[in-house]
Length: 261
Ligand SMILES: Nc1ncnc2c1ncn2[C@@H]1O[C@H](COP(=O)(O)OP(=O)(O)OP(=O)(O)O)[C@@H](O)[C@H]1O
Image (cartoon, rainbow, N blue to C red; front, side, top):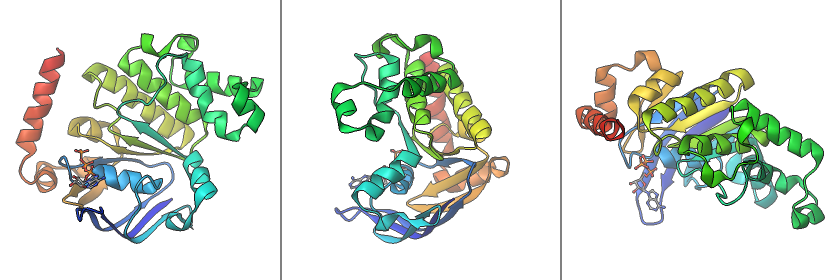
């Protein structure tokens, strides 16, 4: 369970990115965080694994106040919280399986890290993770020979291999075309439902968020203005989140879609 209690985030330049955030996310939820650019979505997500430090309030993950963690404890927290980025963050000039095996490096003794030798068990786990996202047949292909969608699935497999309880996804489909986006979103949904991994996703595509997430958190100027089931997101709610700019957002989405077809 993730709990935000009166969380504040003010960057060193004085920008107030989050204001008085109170939020509880239970294990196994699929949450989409939506809002205009600069609303604070990314900051909210990145506070959970301490990529950003909060400047007020408390942030608790499974009864542990994450702000009190230091060095090794932060690394351990991040083992349990997978992170997926828009840009995939893969080593593209090497094989898919090597990219997934990277997730075991922190567990390995020094000599294994030095020689890059992985155990048979680790290789099996890596292949299982690739199988879960449907790209087992690509295990020995170089990453730069894969499509964007396949690369995002490799990133997802790498995260799965570390056995996380939570996956944070920061704009995971922003650089994918609509068809590929849905394939990747289906993977997220499957992982969420079958493995009971919480998914907290920051996403610009409102219609995709509503289709896949169970719960929507709408942020505007660093504050939560909506928190509820996707089914309850009406046009009024969207106007509240986007400040009456939903038509502009929809137009931008339509333009993006048009660019792909
Ligand atoms: N490292 C930083 N230093 C200073 N200000 C920052 C930093 N990162 C973000 N901000 C500011 O904090 C606010 C929230 O940014 P954030 O990236 O969380 O928004 P977002 O909703 O994720 O936006 P986008 O959808 O464009 O990624 C914005 O005003 C942004 O300019």
